[in-house]
Image (cartoon, rainbow over all chains, first blue to last red; front, side, top):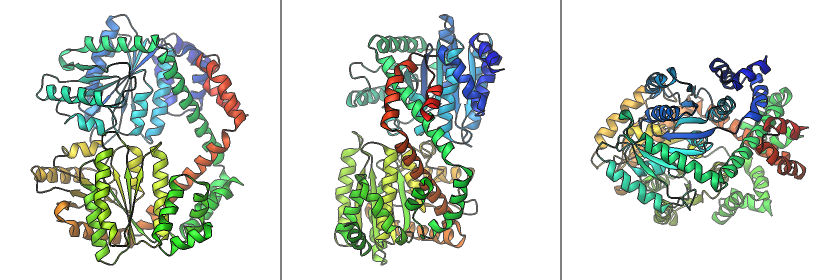
Length: 310
Length: 310
C-alpha cells in the first residue's frame, strides 16, 4: 500500500501527493513510514518562504511567482499555512480560492494547511509536506506563512530563501522589526508600492537593514518593489531569489543551512518520541493522583518530577 | 548554606532574594534545591503581567502601579524581562534606571532579567524568579514583558491577571491582534491617552473585544485610559485588577488557571530532564558520525532516530 503510494508520489501524481500530505496532516502512523520511503528522493527542491503581515499580498505574490517559475519550465509546489483566527479566516480562505487559478492549467500543486491545534505541530507538518512535494520532483516549493508568532517564523526559517513582504500601509518598518521579521528576511518586498508611503518605507527598511547584523554579512539584502496585483516586479523578485540561491550554493552555505535544519529536525523527532514514550498510563495516573497535593504545596513539582523518573 | 539562604528569603531579605534570583538566572544546580525548599511557601502572591509593544509605557505603568500597591500596604515585587535587541536595548535600560526610584524608599523589589540566549529558557527563569519573590512574602508580583514573540506571550500568560498596554501611536488595534495580544489580555490599557488617536483606538479595541471569543465569556474586558507619566488612570487600573482578582477567586477560576500552569510547568520540567538524560556522549557521537550520511540521503532521519532509541 504505502510502497505503491510512494511510487505514485515519485511519479508526481497529484492525487497521491494530496493523499500523502493528508497522512502527514492527520498525524497518521503511516506518515512516518511514507516519509522514510521518500527520503532518499528529497533534497533536490529549492524552498522559498514567503512571509509578512496579513493583508500584505503574500498570496498574490506567491501566485505570480509560481506562474513565472512555471513559464520558465520549473515545477512548483505551494504550501500555504493559514492560521485559523476568527479574524482572518475568511480573508485567507478568499485568497486561497483566488489562488487556485494558478494551479488549474499547470503542474503547480497547491495545498493549504490550517493551524488547528498547536502551531508547533504545524511547523512539523508543513516541513513534512514539503518533503513529499520535494520527492514528487518539484523544482521549487513555496511555503507561505503569516509572519506572526514564533512557530510561523520557524516555518519561514526552514526555507532556503526567505522573502518578507511588506506594504506601505502595514504601518512602518518598526512594526516589522518588532515582529522579528527583520532577522529572517533574505529578500524584502514592498508590495502595493504604487501607494503612498512606499518611498519612506523603502528608506526606513534600508536604514534598518544597514544597522542590523544580517544573516550573511557579505551580502546586501535587496528590497524589491512590486505591485503584485498587476504582476509588476515579480520578475525582479524572481531574479533576486535565483541570485540568492546561487550565492548560497557557491559559498557552500546552502549545505550548511540545510544541515542545521536537519539537526533541528532530528532534535524535534527525538523530543516528540521521548515525550510520547515517557507518559505511560502509570505515569499519567501518578500525575492525576499527585496534582492536587502539588497544588496544595504538599509536594513540590521538582520532587514530583524526580519521582516520575524513578 | 541553601537552608540559610531559604530562611533569609522567607524573612524577605533583599540581598537574599537577589542572590536566589541570580542562582535561577545562572541556571545553577543549587537553584533547583532552593526552589524545592521554598515551594511550600509559594502560591500566596498574586501575579500581574504587564505586556505590550515597545514604547507603550509599560515601565511607567508598572512603576505607578507598584507605588499605589505600596501605599495600600501591599508588598510588591517586579520582574522586568528585557529582550536584548540591538534596537531596544538602550531604551529599556533607560526605563530601568528611571524605575529604580520606586524601589528606593519602599519594600518593592525590582529585578531585570535579560534575554541572553534562549527566550524559552527565560520564561522558565522568570517563572522561577516569581516563585522566589512569592516565597519572600510579596503580595503582588508584576511581570513586565514586551509583547513580542511566543515565549514572551508565555510569560504573560503565567500571570493571574494580564494587562495589555497600548498607545494611540502604536498604530492600531489591528497590530495588537496580529501580535496575539488580543487573546491574552484580561484588561487593556490605552496609555498616553491624551494624544491623538486614543478615541479611535478605544472604539476599535472595544469592537474587536466584542467580536472575539474572550477567555472568560461571562465577563466584559475593561479598557482603561491612562496617562501614566502624570499618574492618571493608575487607580482605575488598580481597581480593575482587584476586580478581576475577585472574579477569578469567587468563581474558582484562579485555582483552575494555576493548576493549568502547574501542569505546563511539570511538562517542561519533564521535557528538560528527558532531553538532558537522552543526549549521552555516545548518542552525541552517533549523531556526529551519521549526520553526513543523513545529509547525503543515505540514511533517513527517521531511521536514525529509531536507531538512537535502540
